[in-house]
Length: 326
Image (cartoon, rainbow, N blue to C red; front, side, top):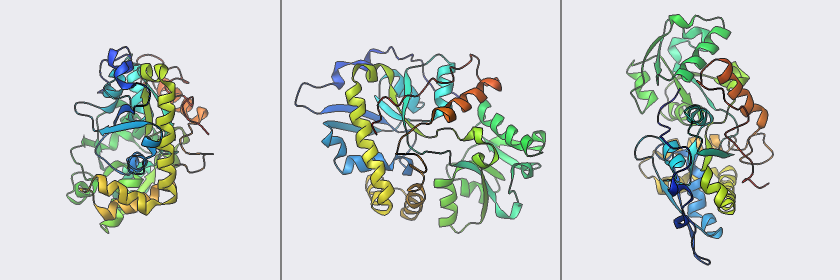
């Protein structure tokens, strides 16, 4: 389904090593792995760092990017005790037998991704992707998602041409006619289009089919570490929650904190994204971080039903609310 889960099954010695748990009175040192380069999905982490929320919990947190492969490989092997993942990536890891990580909090409450295209092409719904070029990550679950939304909208998936995804900036790719439509996150790529005053059409997967309201992204923890040091994981999640709650209430200030940590980012894009995500981090949930069992289970069931996993997934696996305090 997806690559890069690594070879861990949660049994690596580093995952629960005593090096992460200091002697009494010292700070607990943790490594937190991002899924990609810093962006507004990570704002709450940088806020917690800058505001001293981790320090308040007795933690020293080192934020890193995945050096080789994906965050899942680093979390599952214990190179990072926690990090950023996605429900579909966790499913892929579990399918490979690498069950060393578990989602412990939702960073964004609903799936805010969908299809973006040039406005002039008139692609306002899935059926209208027919006869156009879509840029793909060449993942089975991704292409099955596109197939389902097109066919459920009366479209013919066979009439969609696919080319490999090779860009970091989707707007640049659309401008250069490298493709006609692309899977993006509304909080980043669509905001980038607005900042650049580039006219696009966008429709969300959730609007097409509620089964795609899965959790993306999430904070995941290494299982062995979490079982050995549950209070440390709870402390991390508490601090992260404070960080995201600050980002919800003070998006501009939170955006400035992210820019201080990653000055290479566009200030206009970060601020536009921060404003958008302030309403999405918690959305309609009772509090930040909550994972809804029915939505999680529904997506795993879809993966099972579509035979996108070699081994049937336990539909209630891969997540826990044991470390998130109300």
